Structures are given as structure tokens and as C-alpha cells.
Amino acid sequence: MLIDSADDLCDIARKVPLQQVEHKILTDAGIELLVRRDDLVDAELSGNKFYKLFFNLRAAREQGFNTLSSFGGAYSNHLHALAAAGNRYGFNTLGVVRGERPSHLSPTLRDAVAWGMQLVFVSRMDYQRKSEPELIAEFQSRYGDFYLIPEGGANVAGARGMQALGRILEHQLKGDYTAVCMASGTGTSLAGLAAGIDREKPAIGFSVLKGEGGLGNSISRTYRQLCDSHGADNWRLISGFHAGGYGKKHPEYLSQFWQEFERASGIPLDPIYTLKLFWGIYSLAQQGYWPRGSRIVALHSGGLQGRRGFMCP
Ligand SMILES: *Cc1c(COP(=O)(O)O)cnc(C)c1O
Image (cartoon, rainbow, N blue to C red; front, side, top):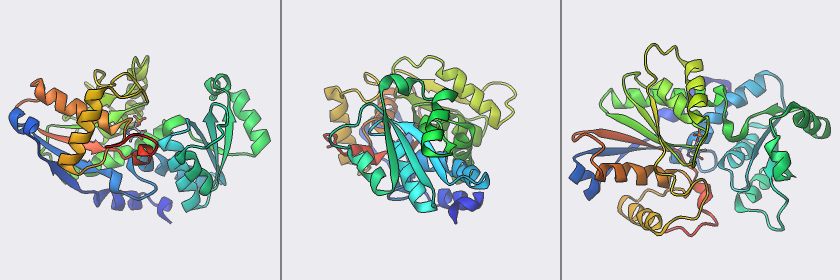
């Protein structure tokens, strides 16, 4: 079974293609852009959520848990991936969802239920308390014992899967690149990625959140748990491309960029994360941010299930 050995994660990660994208903006800026297509890992369980779950599933199995639980919103890529993983690797899953139960479940939650996830809806107020031991104990007495994964898969085990990806990417590129970029929410994936690649090269996160208090500290903490960094950390966070914040309605220019990018590249993007990543990379290219001759790598972190219910190009 997949989760029984780390080699299997690496076997999968090694097969992920790097695809070159051409565009006038890139040519004019004198840069090359390669996309690592981690959205193609699997039809149900792909992108960074696959890497973030891997060592969590393994820990749960080793510790003898039959049930996995985590939190998220009604469109959460993380809960979607957790439900798929539970179904595939033989765990029960309990998804704690923010907000009242709606009369119609989102496509994300419908999939999760079809994969056997039990959903518990909690008020926004209780949801804010979700990490408090009392609330977790209450859930455990009601639904049985479970292995708890934080919202978004944001723990060191999650980052460790992304560190493995980073090592493989470094090997694929043989040092011939300038920077690796990805979309950041909690920043867990960024911390892992930075710890996996060459310490001299930057991993750049494009934050999709507006005003992320404390994000830098938590990225730094996770990063330092994965590698002894002497000197400066090799991750950076860029905050100017959240376009209003997480899950907010897209301004017109962003919808236009989405449409044009997909038409030109043939690469589908998700509305919350990867769209903002590519928009950020292209905008910085227009501003002359990337030195001419740069070879930029963008990590496609998946999330394509989130296209449903969105007006996609
Ligand atoms: C969850 C997610 C991210 C953000 O990952 P973090 O580790 O929380 O920063 C990026 N891209 C996609 C597609 C995601 O689903």
C-alpha cells in the first residue's frame, strides 16, 4: 500500500512533468517559465494536499488509528483530499465543516460524503475554537477516537511531504533554475518546499490571504523543524497578489487573466490559489522584478476540484 513507504511518495513525485509555458510577457521580460504539474498526480488525490497528507496518513496507521479527522470550509481542497485518501487507504474520515448545514451540499462535500466522510457542521463561533482541547475531547467522546490533522494539513508531517517534493524537484532541475514559486495559504507547503530545495535558491510563496498576521513566524518555525538553517531562510512570502483575499469575488482583470492564461497554455487553474500564483508571476515579469535570463519554476499545487461552482473560463 502506498502509505507504507516513503519511496512510493518519491516514485509518484518523480513522474510529475515539468512543462514550459510560452507567453509574450515572459519573452519580453527575458525569462523562462516552467510549470511542475502536481495537479496531474491523480484524478482525486493530487496537488500539494496529497503531499501534505502522506506522512499524516502514515503516522495515523503506525499509531493504530482507524479514523482521521480534520476541519475546513464547504469548498475545502483539504477535506476533499482527506475524504479521497480515507476511501483509498481504508480509514474512516470525519470532516468538521465551518457553518450551518446548507440545504444543498457543495460539490466538494458531496464528493466527500460519497467517499464515506462523515460531516459535522459547527457554528462559526465553535469553528474558531476548533483547536481547543475541550472541543476536540467533546468530538472524540461523541464520534470516537481519531487522528487529528490540523486545518489545511498544516503540521510538520504535512510540510515533510512537500520537503520530499522539493528534493525531487531539485534533482529534476539539476540546479538549473532561479526560483521556485507556489501559492500559499497557511505556508506549510512553502516551508517544506524551501527545506527540500537547494538552500541557496529561493522558494517564493504568493499569499492568497489578505493580512496574514503571524504567517511568517509559523512558516519559519515549520522550516526550522525540517532543516538546521544556518544563516538566512530561503523562503520568501509575497503579499501583493491576493486580489481581495481568500475566496473573494474576482476583479474583472483577474477573470480576464484566467481566461487568457488557460487559452494560451492549456493549463487549468483553480480560482483560489494557482490563478493568483500565475497572475503574480506574470505581473512581476511586467514590472521587471525577475532578472533577465531567469528560469522560474511554478508549482501547480492542484485544487482543480474547486473550479466547480465557479464561473470558469
Ligand atoms: C491548500 C492549497 C495551497 C496552500 O497550501 P499551504 O500549505 O496551506 O500554504 C496552495 N494551492 C492549492 C491548490 C491548495 O489547495
